[in-house]
Image (tube, rainbow, N blue to C red; front, top):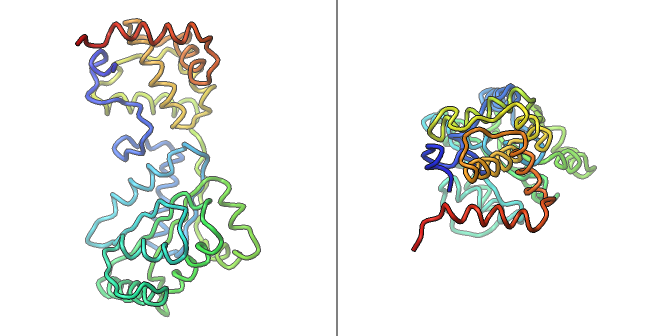
Length: 289
């Protein structure tokens, strides 16, 4: 709605995990380096954790996109509600494999043959399990068994388990101790600090089409940081609403008061009448039919 007013080609603060908008804060850069090290050193298991909205999925998609297709084969599984058999089926499907019998043994044999072929061809195989905190113990045990596909010298597949902090508790279960002991690379992604958030906001606006198409005052930035705690998803939600308010007020300067109003509307503290009035005022900017 406000893109034309500010001169954006697209909305700068969507909450979908678009790798093109990834901002490499110091935290994200370090997490990325851990992922690269783990794959290049054939570390086996990698654990990436972080609070909701800290950018784990965007980082993982960027990481997979940057692995050259000649030297790597990758698969991303984003469905925690799988049985162990469904997991194997999904993995083989993601790698483009074909099989005849829907049995766990047959699927493992097909996968093992594929991994050996990739090893001979000099390629690394990477499997990413996102939202892994929701996986059942049965499925996590199946993932451990997949990691047993190896030669005398190398792991044939590198497995990244990514999830919310609850994943740490899941892996600490007694029945999963064998899997937990095999994780050799771990990283916990923290929210951004205030300065990183400021650069993040400018970064997204520039990628959307215009550098400083809107200007967030220091008071506005402080209010957004206080609300978001430096979590990218919450920053996006607050900035998007603040830009809507700026559009409604026909100004490119986002003040602290506007940011406070945006946050109040997001958390539901705006009185009904005032909130309704905001959207009614926006109505005058819509085209007439």
